[in-house]
Image 1 (cartoon, rainbow, N blue to C red):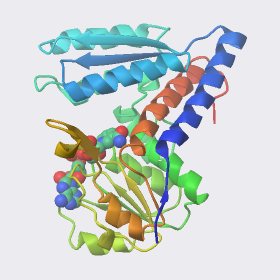
Image 2: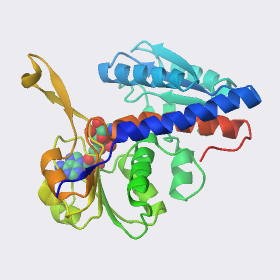
Image 3: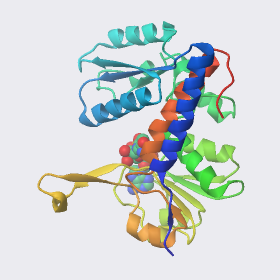
Image 4: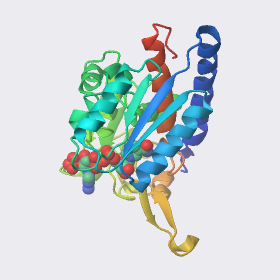
Length: 296
Ligand code: NDP
């Protein structure tokens, strides 16, 4: 069997098109332009790439992008003052603080300072609680993108066995909540899970969010299962030239694709969907702030 490729890049383009159409209507009918503020502290190279890409795509769908680049030694007080200012700014509908923050800054404190209604990353404790209790919330972008691809591929997820590998607050736990919300039978595996291969082999859906290159191999996968690879691991690629690198996922694509029914590639799977969902969340936040009908 060779798995069907779930093309996150193409899917993300359709999500962005829908967002752009909605933004155009908001401008025309209501004179409102959604705005996303992204705050970057320090010069982490990967974070810089993400922030640039987010800013570019925000503008491409017709929204306003406000980038705030702060020095690495910015004090907690200064960062909190900026968040306070963005919370009060009616032109800003979404606020994203790029993680990880430098070590002297308390991530929980900073995230919980964001107005939950503008928390387009969905990491604020209020949004976590709302998601956990099945109420309307801001949903974290990466798991939301995974859910959209799964729904698109399967139609209904009801009754399917799903295994999420990883229990982080930003991917694993919200992913499990979303799958539960769609009536999957959910298992969360992590570094202490016994017989993890056996656990995964029972799954109709495997979502890998581990951060270990190519850890999940084909013999972990039930024939025909769907594999969603969240992992982004940069490795040396001497075949591309000296000093070159490439990205691989947490799943060994070749062996998994031989067994799975469907699989997301890395790159071109979950990654593009994450930014598309960030734009969709910003649009949702803008509609809610203006008491307008929300996009689907
Ligand atoms: P974290 O490091 O926060 O969490 C990793 C999880 O994997 C932990 O729960 C850990 O278990 C578990 N784990 C580690 N080793 C093993 C193992 N040997 N077997 C089973 N479980 C293990 O990572 P994130 O959730 O932030 O990210 C995971 C991956 O997803 C990374 O590659 C990251 O780059 C990528 N990512 C991709 C995004 C995208 O847009 N595509 C967005 C966000 C992340 P324990 O809790 O027991 O330590």
